[in-house]
Amino acid sequence: MKKLIVLIFLSAFLFGCGAEAQKSEFWDHDTMYKNNEHLWYSWTGYENPNAEWAEKSKEQGWWGIEIPYNPNK
Image (tube, rainbow, N blue to C red; front, side):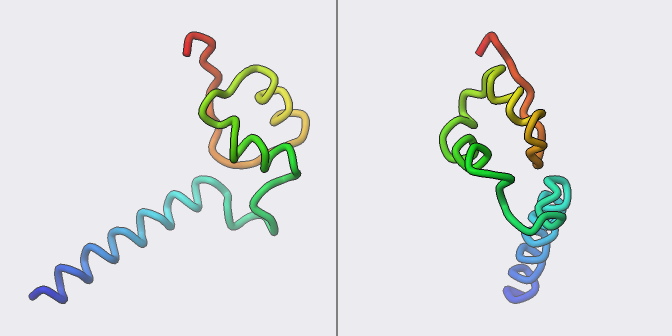
């Protein structure tokens, strides 16, 4: 019985991660980041996105789940 419960939770976890990876287009690219600016944003700027980062993302064609800009934050 314990094995069945563990198997169910493991399956749910893997399916959830797979769905999220598909939504982010992770598997559609040969690298995780488009360029060094994309890497830098992902490591440091994602907590406080601003208009400058949004513009760079559009210009350079970054990929992933869109983070909407909220100037009131």
